[in-house]
Image (cartoon, rainbow, N blue to C red):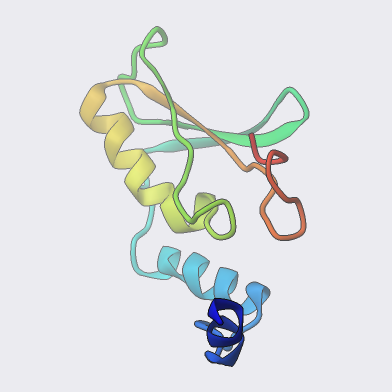
Length: 111
């Protein structure tokens, strides 16, 4: 009975995953990383990542920032401005890995 009910419901999202990701990432058009914040693309092992560093950041204050999005959505584009504000407020640097996303890469691929 529960399966029948679940199958009868319309999908929560009618957009493709790609369209949902683009929509989520488009937030960077409104919320931009400050011009004085340095963003450096690096590899954290085999995972692409970004260091986000505000002026005066202390090298020994490191934040590992895992963006939201349920391991399906999100990237440096959708969360970069927030990451830069956290780095600035703490006087540290933030490492933001761009981990693999589901459903193309199911759990535990992201972690």
